[in-house]
Length: 90
Image (cartoon, rainbow, N blue to C red; front, side):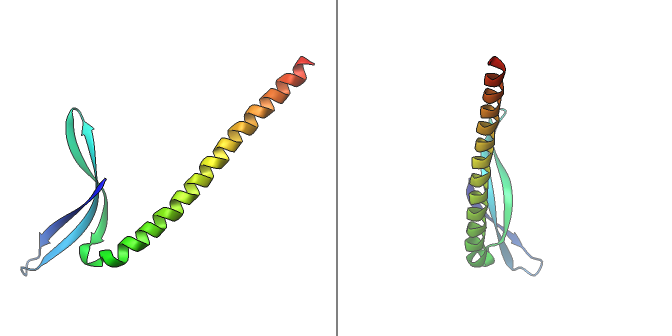
């Protein structure tokens, strides 16, 4: 993924610049660039980017916790099955 800027002209001749998050994928043997997110105006990036990074870090921590719980849940279920099967063997 990478960041891309695009410029658009207003009717009054002024220009506005936008920041996009773009991903490159190979689809059907061709390379396509897919816009994943419009991050807003480039002029606001100084305020936007640090806030976005903080939010992504918090989200990443929550995902890691969910993965740990899912892994733990799988181990508990496997252990329960083993205990049930061992109890039936007795």
